[in-house]
Amino acid sequence: MDPLKAAVIVFPGSNCDRDVAVALEASLGRAPLMVWHRDTELPAVDLVVVPGGFSYGDYLRCGAMAAHSPILREVKARAAQGLHVLGICNGFQILTEAGLLPGVLMRNMALRFICRDVHLRVETNASAFARNYAKASVVRLPIAHAEGNYFADAETLKRLEGEGRVAFRYVSAEGEATEAANPNGSARNIAGIYNETRTVLGLMPHPERLAEEALGGTDGKPMFDGLVEALS
Image 1 (cartoon, one colour):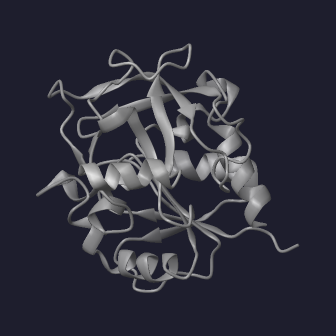
Image 2: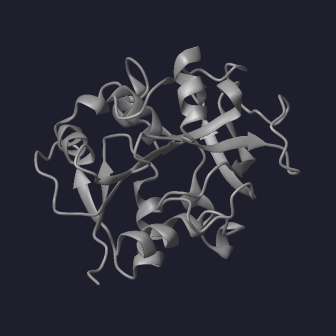
């Protein structure tokens, strides 16, 4: 079995690239490659993580400029061939702007930055990303965003639901998808979605920020462990 090869894309304004690298290294046993946004070639890897932060200072729209960076053209091409791609927070925004995932991330309904832990329900574990979570289980992960309000038209939302592509949903600690449990106004309490083949995942909460006990919890670690197990 060949060891998993992973890469983290780094943009000017990324601020969670090192956090993701640490979480990946803990599961992989070695550091992932750090790939600069202006690179035009993507190394032979099994997993790419597009991390959180404020790529290009969030000018125009969050993720809009990063989506057209040289390396994203390579990520898109490889994703079309089945490469697994994980976009976290700003990375989720970038993936929607690049057309790798449908919909858009808008300003939070409260029109302010929100930084706190939230509860998520695992809507499906039929992917490399969620295989180590029990379906319908509730996990706790942090959010830190001003533009996490997921929106898509009614037909897209219906398709996402019907195809089982809603990955995680904001819920109460008891697992109920209530309005009070929705921190940003996202349609149908959606916190993360998959592409058609479930090889691309975008999610707003940060699994890398709760991936070891020293950080206050390990609910994010199963995602990285599962990816290593599934893709190695």
